[in-house]
Length: 197
Image (cartoon, rainbow, N blue to C red):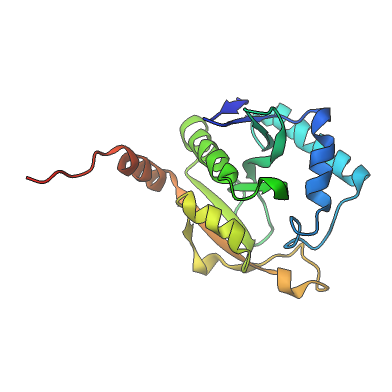
């Protein structure tokens, strides 16, 4: 199903040439501020290969973001099955992203996220897509809002994979958008503005 293209981006599977950028992301203190661990080069390489194999099998996942104008990789964005025990039911689809710090603030995650929402609802027929983040990760939740996802206060949870050594990272908020909400959002975006009579 991939690669996907937007005006400025190509969303594709990983290649070996992406390894340095991928490690940079997973080791950067600021990028990983809301995660309890950092990956060394070996761990980053192993994760990249797992992501690549998953995309090969399923046609979607957390995919590389390539900038059309330079051909460089800026990070990743994608949709994925998430099964956090006692939090999300089996089959729940999440959308997520992570960019190198030097590509922050350029709308890349929002542009990539919109393409993945369209793919998930139009091509895969998903009925809902969720996203979640540490409660005070305002940079990430701002992207969720720009994508049209809405806060679901009743779904807030304590992430079971975050150890007690990092209690400030345990509380997570959840945003979501349904296929019907996404369709309505698309219709509003293309509707002509009202004219004076």
